[in-house]
Image (cartoon, rainbow, N blue to C red; front, side, top):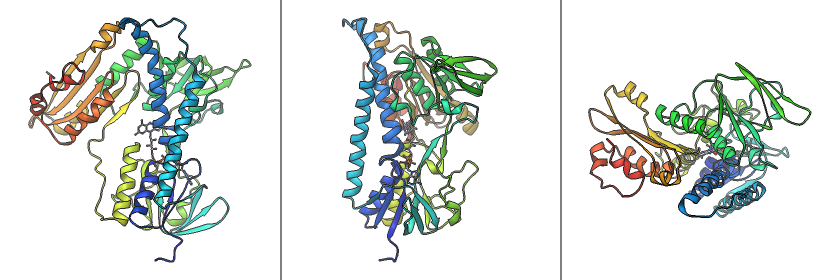
Length: 449
Ligand SMILES: Cc1cc2nc3c(=O)[nH]c(=O)nc-3n(C[C@H](O)[C@H](O)[C@H](O)COP(=O)(O)OP(=O)(O)OC[C@H]3O[C@@H](n4cnc5c(N)ncnc54)[C@H](O)[C@@H]3O)c2cc1C
C-alpha cells in the first residue's frame, strides 16, 4: 500500500473519467473522482443524451405531417408543448446521472463533489482548500463551448444553456457549421423557429464527405433554413423589445430572439494548475499525451476531450478503459483511432466512416466510387421530396471498401453496422455477395453500382 491518499485521483466524472475510475477500482486500485458539476459529464448532462432526445422530439413534426399520407387523421392544431418535452428530457438526464453515481459507488470509487486543481505531480486541491495525494492523477476534465469575442456576446447562449430554455424562440441565429450547429438547426426548425445558420467560411461540416454535406445544405435550404456564409460577428445588441440585433461583416444585420453559439469546444485546462506539475499543453490548450495517455509529467495522464484527439463519447470511454487496463490490469491496451464512425443528427441525419473520396484520392491515388441517390419509399408515399445519398469509396487496386458516407432516414443506425465491415477491411465484392434484405434502405449498400 502506497503512502498516498489514493492510488488514482480522477479529475472529472464524464465519459472518460467515470470509465477509468470504475475499471481501475475493479482492478483493485483505491480511486477517488472529483466532479465540479454533475456525474455523467457532457454526454449525459448536456450533450449526446439530451440532444438525441430533442432530435427524437423534433422528428415528430415531420412524422405527424407525413402520417396524413399514411391514412392517419392528424388535427391541424396539433400543438407542440416545449416545457413538457424539456422537463421529461431533464428527468431522464437525472435518472442517468443517478445510475452513473450508483455504478461508481458500487465499484468502490469515492465521489468528491468539488472542483479539483493540480498543485503538483501527486497532489490536487479541492474547493474547501484540502489537499489530496495520489500516486497517479488522471485529467478527464473535458471541454467547454467556445464563445466568439465580440461586443454583446453575453447575450448569446451555448449548448450548456440550450436544454433549459423557458420557450422556443421564434427566430434563432446559430453560429457555427459543425455537427452541434447543424443538429440544433434541425431541432429548432422542427419546433417551428426560423433558423439562420451563420458561419465564418463557406463550408459546413468540414471533414464529412462533400456530396453528403452538399445534400444536407440543399435539403436545409429547401426546408427554409437560411445561411450566412463568410460571415464574422461584429456585435450583438439587445434592443428595447428584448430582441437581438446581430451585426456581421459581409452581410446585412439580422434581428432574432436568440443567438446560439456552436463555434467549437475548448479543453478545460485554464486554471487547472497543470503547469505546477510540468504538464505540457498544445497551442489549443489541450493536454499533450503519448499513446498510453501519459502527459509530460510521468504521474499525470489525460483522456477524452481535454486531449483534443477525437472529441466523441465512445472515444473518451475507450481511452478511459485503455488507461485503466494498462495501469491496473493486464496492460498493453491502446485505442485504435482508425475508422471511427461518426454521425450528425441533423434533419435528415448523415453519417460516415473511413476516408472521404478526396482523402482516398490523395492517399491511395487509384480509387473507385459507387453511389446510390434515391428517394426512400416512405418519403415517396409521404410526398416528401427528400432524396437519400449513399456513397462507397473503394481502393481500386484491392477492391477494399475504405469509406462509406450516407445521408437519409436512419443512416446513423445503418452506418454503425456497415462500419464493422469497413473496419474489418471487407471488399466491395464481399458486400455484393451479401443478399439484400428487402425492402429496406440499407439494402442499397449491397446493390451499389
Ligand atoms: C451538445 C453536444 C452534443 C454532443 N453529441 C455527441 C454525440 O452525439 N456523440 C458523441 O459521441 N459525442 C457527442 N458530444 C461530445 C461528447 O459529449 C464528449 O466527447 C464527451 O462527453 C467527452 O468526454 P470527457 O470525459 O472527455 O469529458 P466530459 O464528458 O465533458 O466530462 C468532463 C467532466 O469534468 C468536469 N470537470 C471539469 N473541470 C473540472 C475540475 N477542475 N474539477 C472537477 N471536475 C471538473 C466537468 O464538469 C465534466 O463533468 C456532444 C457534445 C455536446 C456539447
